[in-house]
Image (tube, rainbow, N blue to C red):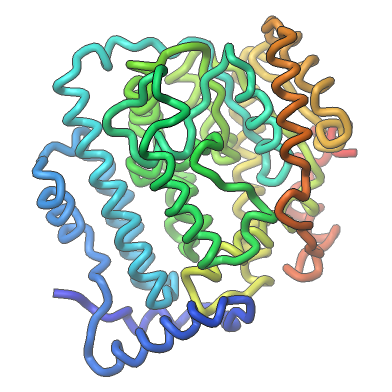
Length: 424
């Protein structure tokens, strides 16, 4: 039995309809709305029914650590009550959650049948973090070119069963299917690739790994769910990072070459849990003026969420992202004080944009990692093949999102004073 989107979802801050949705997306959503008003229901965003469907689809029963359920319950409630999903958005969200549940079931099943997975050791993983849109993706993709590192590609994180094999990694049959799926995302939100590159072979962020434990910023990027995001910031993330480690063990069991290089701005909120799980972790913190970073990220969120909702308000998104990431930055600064500072390296966005190879050279030197000629050559070649505006120029303005320097100082005064040398 399916339920229509609750009327309570309308009782939020006014949000204007998006004007950049493709004609075919608008048409599907209008048809879907007519069906809804006629009594035909959308997929039911109900945690119990999703779990039942995942078990039926996979033939499996064991979800492992049941602490994932809290996140799933709050997430589904928020998707129903707050997100204002369109017809396409409702369908996409339903299958998105179902897919993560199925991945969880299959990973736990595989782990139980392959004891070698549990014996995998994750050594000195390198985590790239910082506010979003601070150059973390560029840095991530460049370091991923180093043969001494291993990064989780989008295709293997999306379709991790069976674990990838080194001999067939570059030509795995799953790559083509995931590329088709990602192409659909571009069709739903045209121009998204100009803001953030996507592709089956590109390194995937850790938010996608954490999504199958259901405490992840991945969902907050896609849907308007502020209560869920606030709740997630207050959680003990020990079980989430244990799941993260289990996922990496699975991915490396048949392809374990090198140290992991990983990335997510959200790690900044949970450094104490990250280091508790990975005591020898290396942490790179990228810095940029919050006003610039959050304006750019708000543009990305507007573009992405427009594929799933007919009601997008850039000022509301800008205000929420500014407040949300001020809390994340504060948590990162608080947790950092307890770390061995030799585990942390700070990066300036301006330097990363002007001379990324030099920045990486300093980063490697700080952590005692040799930057070999082959790795540097691959990085330079990658830069040549993937220029910054490969898919178009990303244009935005803080004013589009109701942001300004006054608001920046109000929310980020401590961050600005602590890292003033790294923001220009």
